[in-house]
Structure formats: C-alpha cells, structure tokens
Amino acid sequence: MKIVSAEEMRAIDRATSERFGVPPLTLMENAGSGVVHFVLTDYPRVDRVAVVCGKGNNGGDGFVAAQKLFEARKAVRVLLLCDPSELRGDAAIMFRRMKIVPFVVRDEKDLNSSDAADIFAADLIVDAILGTGFRPPVSSLYAAAIRKINNGTSPIVAVDIPSGAEPDAVEATQGTIARADAIVTFTAPRPAHVFGQLTKGPTVIASIGSPAEVIVSELGLNLSTPFDFTGLLAPRARDANKGTYGHVLVVGGSLGKSGAAAMAGFSALRTGAGLSTIATPRTILTTVAGFHPEVMTEPLDETSEGTISLKALETVQALSEKKTVLAIGPGISRNHETSELVRTLARKGSIADNVALVLDADALNAFEHVSDKLNGQGRTLVITPHPGEMSRLTGLTIAEVQANRLNVARQFSREHALIVVLKGHRTLVASPDGTAWVNPTGNPGMATGGTGDILTGMVAGMLAQHTLQPLEATALAVYLHGLAGDIAARHIGESSLVATDLIRYLPDAFAEAHNFGRSGFRMHG
Image (cartoon, rainbow, N blue to C red; front, side):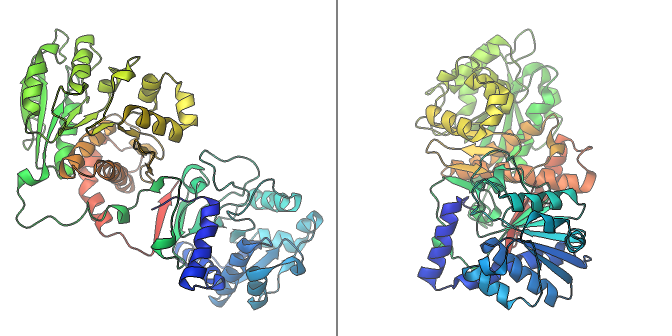
C-alpha cells in the first residue's frame, strides 16, 4: 500500500472525480460512512456521540458521520467551531443535509458553556476539526477545543488524522494535537499515520472509491499489507518438491549460543524453504542437531573459545555451493578470528553471486569501523540490524539513528548497494533505489532474546523461495514475523512472549495473511 503526501492525496481525490466521474460529494459521503462503520463495529454499546467539526472538508466528513449515526439511533450532538455562514463547498452542502441542530461555537468562551460541557462528556467523541490538509499553526479557537477534547475521558475517534497533526511528518508529532484512541483515514495513509505515533489504538485505512490507478506517489514509501504480497503468498504448485523452494545454509552458533543458530535454521523451514542446513562449531553440533530433526547440520572448525574458526572458510565456501541463501550471524559471537571469517565470506567473490547473503547480529558487528567492506553490488545482500548494530555500522549514536530512521536506512542501503532491515517499532526495509517498506506488525512483547534470530531465518527462507524478488520477499518476511508476534501476544500476552512463540504461531500468521479481507486495512500503534 502506497504511503502518500497530503498534496498527493488531494491529487488522488481530484483524479478520482475528474477521470473516473466519482463526485466529490460521494467521496465525502463514503468517508463519513467509513467513520460510522468503524464506530458501530468497534464501539457498538456507545449511545451518546459527540461530533466536533471544523469549517473545512474534515468537518464535512463529520457532518456525514453525525447524520448517519443519528439514523443508526445514536444520541448525536454536533459542536461546530464556526458560524454556519463560513462553511463552503461540499462541507456546506453536507451541513444543510444534516438533520441535527448543532451547537455553534464562535469564540473560546462558548466552549465553557453547559452545552459544550454536555457535548464533551459524551460516551464517544468524533474529532472532525482538522484533516490532512491542515498546516500549522492551530488557531486559538481550534486549539482550545482540542484541549477540551484531550482533558476529557471519552474515547476519541479521529476523522482522517488527529486534529493538529502534520500529515507529512516522518517522526513522532508534537504540538497541539488531539488525543486519538482510533483513527479512520481514507484511501492511503500519509507519513504521519505510519511514523507519527498518533494513537495507541487502531488506524483504519478505509476505501472511499478511488481506483488503484490514481493512487500514485513519489515518496517511494510503502506500508506492508498482505495485498502487496499476493504473488508471494500464492498456493504452491501441485508438482512441487523440496528443491523447488530453495536451500538455506545458516552459519552461526558458538559455545553457549547454540539456540540462536537452531532457531534461525528452523525458522527458514517454517517460512517455506525446502531445505535448511546449519553449519556450526563442532563442539555444539550435537546440541544444535537435537533441537529440530528437520534441520541438517554440518561441523565447522572452532577456536579455543568455541566459536567458528577462520580455518572453516573453505568448508563454508564448499557448503555454500548449490545453496540458495547463506545466512550468517545468529549466535556467532564477536571473537576476532570469527569476525575475520565473516568479513571474508561477505567479500564479493568469496561465494557465488547467485547465493543471496543475509547478515545479522555479530556478523554485522564484524563490520564495526569497516562498514566500507560491505557491498552488495551485483548480488542480493540483506542486513538486519537493530538500532545498536546500525549505530556501530554508521558511526552515529543510537539516538541519532532513532531520530532519523528512514533517512539512515535509505542512505546506508544506497551507499552499500544492499537491502537494510532496520528493526524496531515500524521496522523499515530499504533498497538502494530509495524504495522503502514500512512494517505495521509487531509489538513490545517481541523485545526479547532470539526474535532477531528467527527473523534472520525467516528472511533467508523467504529469499530462498523468491530469488527474483528479494525486496518484496524480505518485506513479507518482516510482516509475517511481526504478525506471528501479534498473534502470540493475543494468546499469551506480551509479557510472557518468548522467541519460539513466533515459530509456534507462524502458521497462523500465514493463514491470516491469506485470508485478509479487502474492506479496509487496519494497523495498530
């Protein structure tokens, strides 16, 4: 799903009307209907609903919602933050069609009246003051109304975007912004919906009638949804065999960290790879082999610390022949000899260019201060750093990475000709041409040891099956990884979630992605 700017959204609405004959009033009617559908579905027991409207088209959406909620037998009150004579265009038409007499607020003192107090005390408030056409600053009257909304205890559903939020912001928004327990926006998300941390509740992207042909954007940003990966999620051919879906080789593990390699290797299989082999230090091979009988193992020479030795280079090179993906890093440790092995294996020409390479964990730390040696030109190279690892690769502080995640990921991807998976809230998947996918799945319960190793295996497993679509395959792996975590959290809670729960619920994540409805996309947080 494309992420569009506020100006691009206006162009989409115009094109929908001019090229496809959908009247602007119909778009407004559909937008208001989308809000009502959400309210009736997610808040079915609510009776008293307040709709707070500004004088622009966002207010027009609010008038539609108010009328339809009234027709649904809700006790609706409308607070209008302007004189009705100030309404223009479609908003004025929808106001005249509304059968509800509004309480009109012309100045701030009116917000302190008993009528206003009664409205702000409703069971639910619909915020239709300012939409994504807003540009700061917020007027004093609107700001006062926003404060009234925020000071209450009623749940708030924002129409299009919480009033006062800047739609094109790619960082957490600040300033005078309405509190939102949910957002219903339309057609496509704007950057702030994805990056702005505008609500802890759901953001629903409702379709209002714009054809796919007019939803275009130059931002190069996409929000991952199952619709974007239908080809990769297609049913398997009836005559398929294990060779059809690739062979993953995981190089990892060290004394005390055998589980990391085992989780990565098994995750590749759970994601659909046909075969998975783990190459690991000889001392821990029996332990690694004991985790999952479906995964094959190979012993490697080791250092005195129980890590993979540089002497294992030729063995790994030989093992990588006829493999589809080589994943290096889970549990590999930071031994200097092991790090040298990683850097050698990652060097172009060390393994065949048709073998995709995935680097994670201490395989990334091996490039601290020498990230210039990382280059994916002419092959598929994917790195999956968390902010700390990205800090070591770039020389930036973690705070600097987190403050500018999108640009940091894009710049590193472009400069090193590789795919960057920058993990964290709204994990980013960036490619050298500037295209980036933003992942909406996942939860804080996944902040636990081992989940990154599972992601490494899942990325490798998906790449093994879709060698010609590495960016999409990586983005889908990230999406399913977070979705498996979300499903696990529903069953066992965030506090008790452990890494292997993602493997346990990964089949459910696939099933949910396959069965995803098309009426509207919903993301959380």
